[in-house]
Image (cartoon, rainbow, N blue to C red; front, side, top):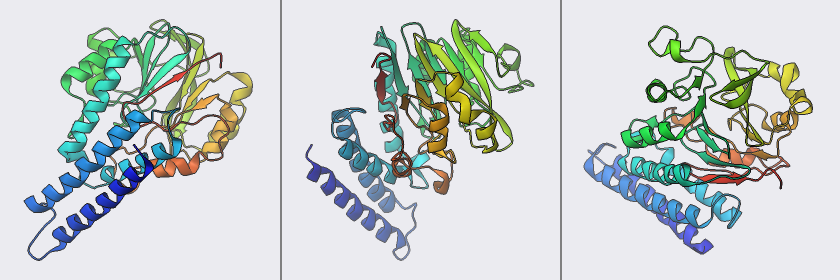
Length: 338
């Protein structure tokens, strides 16, 4: 697609959005009226169709980077509607993206390096020659939710999952229940659901030791979201080391262990939350070869706390290593020898 194609859709989206707002503010109308809903859905579907086509033609790490950036900015718009979690068109777009990812997760043969898929929020799946593991898998929220069959397929594809902290957008009881029913191990923060039926089947790892779960080697670092314990996992598989930060945001942890982490541990891939308070300092301390952010557009949050792709692009400009920005269901392959 040519660049002017995206510009025309942006203009069309603006005009449709203007008509949507005008209709919503008219005498005797409300934002829940059938007319307003129809105008809104027309605009949302047009934007999502453009996003889907353009991202497919310009996958992470290839294609036109500027076109990807503008397209992800376009995706921010419908996802920042207050009612976005309940808009059917957004749910359909999300499930289609997840379906594409699931097919590749199930079928792709990884012989070297690691292939990553970004799912919802800060959920990642990583596949190496040795294992397939997940971080903070959350199926979604309200209408923007994986189907039951998709959740089951994902649970069957994983060998092990790592949970960072108790917040519901990271630790989903229903999905963990599926994993445990299949006999899949789950590493969880201390005490998570200890008073519920799942508790006895979870693994509560201690920080600072080399561990193994489901045949996958890992280590836990003592992170925090404010004062809440937040396990930062460093997983090693197939000759690749992957670190997922969960909602790490406590500045005292920089001097305690983050600033020197890269001198003691090799980290190939860093998966931080996009709103972490000092992303450049985090990257300097960890010293990874690749950074892929998560937590953009968490629809369970209020609009003012749905971190946008546009904000992420503003934060990664000073990061020296590759930092591709991924949306729902997108894939990126990391080759350890390159």
